Image (tube, rainbow, N blue to C red; front, side, top):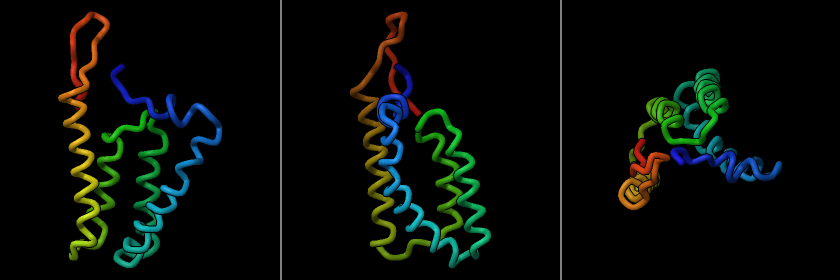
Amino acid sequence: RRHCYVWRHVLGRHWAARYALLPAYLLGGWLLYPPLWRTHGALRALFLCCCAALVLVPTPLIEPRYLTLPVLLLRLHAPPLRRPREWLPPLLLFAAVNAAAIGLFLYRPYQWVDGSVARFMW
């Protein structure tokens, strides 16, 4: 299999599974929206969040490549991270995602139908 079908294997198995991530969504909005509102005003912050939702909601797969542009734009419009307690959590998150991608690439090859071996790569 080439893609990680999170929807089909995890979120689509039970009708309530898709709502299990609601606390994470609310926490993300609670952490993201107020700094944008203070920096750019309520209308622009709402517009940025709506644009991110328009990109992410209709995607058929949950993959990092779909998150790249919205996260980049929201981070560019957010206030700068000045203290270590502000920039250390995103740094650790990005390091963990990169370590996971490198681990998948190195240690989890998959086999195509014709028998050739390929590796996961974004």
